Amino acid sequence: MKPLALTDEILLTIDKPARYLGNETHGVIKNKEEIAIRFCMCFPDVYEIGMSHLGIQILYDMFNRREDTWCERVYSPWVDLDKLMRQQKIPLFALESQDPVRDFDFLGITLQYEMCYTNVLQILDLAGIPLDASERTEADPIVIGGGPCAYNPEPLADFFDLFYIGEGETSYPALLDTYKAHREKGGSRQDFLFQAAQIPGIYVPSLYEVTYKEDGTIASFAPKNPQIPSVVQKQLVQDLNQVSYPTKPLIPFIKVTQDRVVLEIQRGCIRGCRFCQAGMIYRPTRERDAGQLMNYAREMLEATGHEEISLSSLSSSDYSQLPELVDFLIQTAGQECVNISLPSLRIDAFSLDVMSKVQDVKKTSLTFAPEAGTQRMRNVINKGLTEEDILSGAALAFAGGWNKVKLYFMLGLPTEEEEDIRGIPQLAEKIAKRYYEIPKEQRNGKCQITISTSFFVPKPFTPFQWAAMDTQESFLRKAHLVSQEMKEQLNRKSMKYNWHEADVSVLEGVFARGDRRLGAVLRKAYQKGCLYDSWSECFHAEWWQEAFAETGIDPAFYTSRPRSTEEILPWDFLDVGVSKNFLMEEWERSQQEQVTPNCRQSCQGCGAGKYRTGVCKLRKEDPSCENSN
Image (cartoon, rainbow, N blue to C red):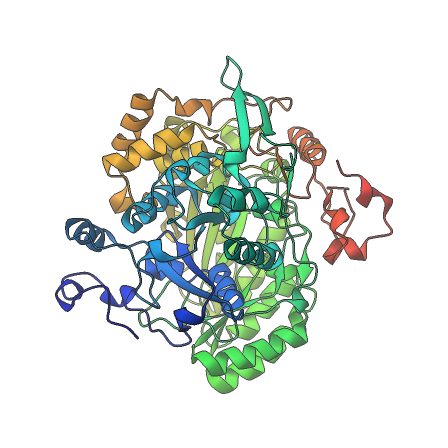
């Protein structure tokens, strides 16, 4: 390994210097003189968060399997090192080679959360890469964005050369091959971007033009050249069993957020919750074979020495081979003294039976997500849970020895009324009563129920993408109402209440459904010092307020303004499989408090059937699968 980019003097003065050393176990080192393409993969947050991201581990492994490509990593420097790098003019560097990021061919940035957008500008700034894509030269890397926030890339359009829409295993090989061939011919940066825009799933914002009406809504959005597609198609892996998986993941030197072996058991979700973006953009649901996962588990436990193994999925309970996989893991993990984590389980007898097997000795807390306090509200959001499901599941959990329950809800959902808000602590009270119905001698200590509420943020490609979002004042009033109602409950001493920051949620809502005019606000906020906005200790609401005022942009235009289904939305040029017609139908059904069956029960013709894979392949004879537009 070459000398470190940071001196010993700097490393001794900053928090957690291991964040910046590289050289982790299973890190990839190649001879850069023999490499045609250098790709720097970035997660714009602190190392501990970025190292826990499965998507980067998958792409890191996939890219480095190519003999002509060396993929390295970079994460956002924490505020202490950020300050020193600016003072001492130290360029941002990749961990593996410690080379400046600006020397790479590509800088790929994962866009996981809207509140990391100022960190994107930090990465570019510290690397010495012009913030505006239009100002970059042949010497600058191609800056590419991907991840869930790329499904509305417009607020970041000024800062990226291109965006990757979909799952990385599909079009990246074509993109890298195109770049390699293009560079060998001595082509220009602009010529490459033009070629890239014709690769499925690649969006080059500089090649599209947007106009606006007098009321601020979009009048038109179209490519500047007829050879560029007017609609960018999401790319999707047809068969998860046929793509590579990182069985030797990077092992950090320090404890990270997800310090465990992660098995991705499936992608997508059959449930159709109307607030959930992931449940729509990752359709259709596709599973990995349990036998393959068993082999992965053996290899990864041996390669990492981790003491926990976690199943990654939007809804683990819906994985059809879960019983046999869990039985295998219990046997294997038991021999290795490894804990098994099963997130995203539904509250039912099957899931609790699974949980009782993996937590037979140590009964940790159970997490349920009713999302809403009343049945009416759960019907509106299509949660697919009845109150009896919740109470019966809680009773089974208590009978099984659990006494700690975490309940997750949202405030500010469409059509929400005061009764729905008060229903949150009232539901917690009913759960507590189920616990205290157990004979005292059979209880496992005092019942502990933690209520957590987040504030609803409408997201693109969901039935609620047209919904008006609550104001900060309304969110806080509703949180106060929950708190007051909780104090009225008989078992209030068994309850604890936490809620998310309202001002952060409102800002998230602005960028979630924003357009490319927000680039000016983002740039202004960054210049004022906004950074690590997802961290409470770093968030400065007043700086953001100043940025909006100085750019003349009203955040309410993007949040509390209701949208017509006729309005052109900033992301309408993307095709994620789920049709706009289906989303409108679901929006109307939500107003009527109607529940839509899940994908395995009945195909609703959402549009994802055109991929002919996963759960849609199983229903290929259903004519409603073709009802997409």
